[in-house]
Image 1 (cartoon, rainbow, N blue to C red):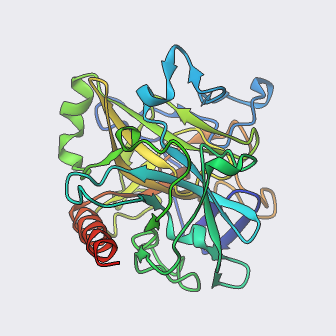
Image 2: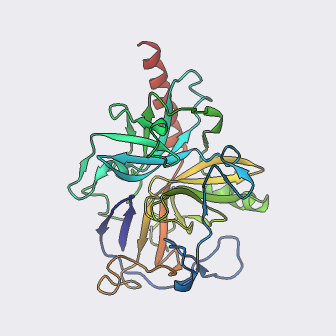
Image 3: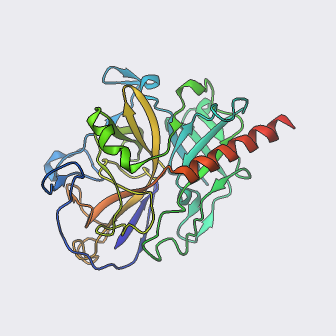
Length: 329
């Protein structure tokens, strides 16, 4: 299996092998196996394959919905002068009502220079990827971090990859016009509830940075599955999500969002993409599957870290700790 972190201005690839059979992807609610055509890293050109459904967030509005209506509270993480990935702004008022500042959720590998496996020392958050506007910049407190058990040197050593690829960050002085009412609430992803969610008209979206267009974008009507022993993830741990949400470079750390009756909840954190060596041998596909390649859980898919009970417990602990420490200053 080959894995790729889409981390903004560069792509760092970490590789290991896994023998796989090429079989169709199966929708958990469908009667028959279905191969779903998806342009995983779409480039806006319908001539080179099935084009993606991403909507760009330009001038604060798209499709009749305002940013506040979509809870487009996302932005980019910029470390040592370059965009490294996406972060979501979390609503922590349920358990830390007096916390000043903002808590962000992202993927842990976004904070690392994966070429030398060292963590960046200086990082900023740029609301809605508006890094050219000073009033939308905010310094990330790199001393106050809650991160999973992520080891950049051992991250792809086995099928358990990705379990520790998450991080909660803190911004003590948010960007201008920060509005906590627009932040997104994190909720535990419970796989068994997905059928009822879909039957009720629920929708899964990915909110993430698009480095091709230099904007935050939304992919709609995604399919999200929990990994099983029969797919690329191997089902080694509960909560590894495989998704077909269209995205581009910079999507690492983006939010997998459940939408039901106008309410949005963060249920997962995007890590990257991976694919099978049998279907896409390195000598023919050195940078991975081409645009327009079929999405398939066994051969070519995106993956992410579900928000589970453990992450919710840590988010509460981290937020309350920040709230307490700020009160004693």
